[in-house]
Image (tube, rainbow, N blue to C red):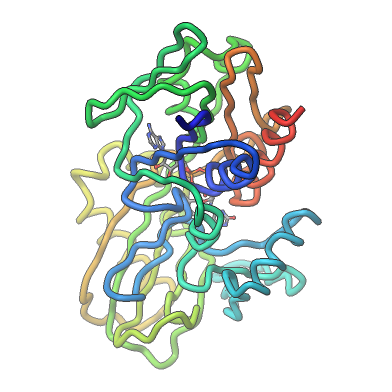
Length: 323
Ligand SMILES: Cc1cc2nc3c(=O)[nH]c(=O)nc-3n(C[C@H](O)[C@H](O)[C@H](O)COP(=O)(O)OP(=O)(O)OC[C@H]3O[C@@H](n4cnc5c(N)ncnc54)[C@H](O)[C@@H]3O)c2cc1C
């Protein structure tokens, strides 16, 4: 029997699973179809697709820099040579900051860390219960599984819903607002003068990244990932499922208007709403561990809004568990 169950295959779940698997038997579940969480890659055909969450990594801490360096050497990650264009802004690109991406997609780190882990996808955890020193986990497919230890890595509001009864009030009753993001992916006719990415100073559109500039594949179209501002997405996210067409259209029109790229026929459009995209106000603790109940939590939102934050949180939890 596996003795540790991890929920989530994003950077936090993948990192803690990898670290713990050296000494323990570990099993991981994720409700999504594949690994990566908010650093997922939306595959369209063969190797062609969009990074529809994390756009790139720019390591800040010494430890994470070292980790990404190793993965570049192993050809899991690579440097993205794209240049950002800052529109209507005095901001300039800081050339000291590396822009690192997955060789095939930004979920490559999770894939690499989970290579030897027993992973189960399309497995949504619905309820948890704790009895006689065992966790009983009920999944959407009706299966109930028991574990001695569990580690949860979901966004804070989802964590609260699942585990409020079992986590110390002083921690779980804190208020933490996670901003939303709406991402629209488009394929358009090739434009020879396409840049690699734009930062916009706009109320609706925040960012556009050109997937072809990452040089992972050759597509006959220009593929753009458009990401909204938090403030616009916070207002639109609850109705995004019903208003996908309208919201995508608003973002696409803004993109052509602001970038001044010639408006051409849209070959296809995809829309993804991230209800809980990120949190920019870190907690004082980097992870949560209850050694009596053997319940752990690690996630980006403890530390900050970036992928590196999840990696730091998972390492912090690993230290707590090991002590
Ligand atoms: C639009 C967007 C753009 C971003 N851009 C960048 C960027 O450019 N650079 C950067 O560094 N960071 C960026 N980020 C932030 C980065 O993606 C996150 O910080 C990081 O991916 C969080 O990893 P995590 O493992 O903590 O959480 P997640 O990646 O959210 O992983 C949690 C996992 O748990 C699973 N899960 C949740 N609930 C359940 C359940 N009940 N049962 C089973 N599984 C469950 C989810 O499916 C998910 O896979 C961006 C995020 C978004 C949304």
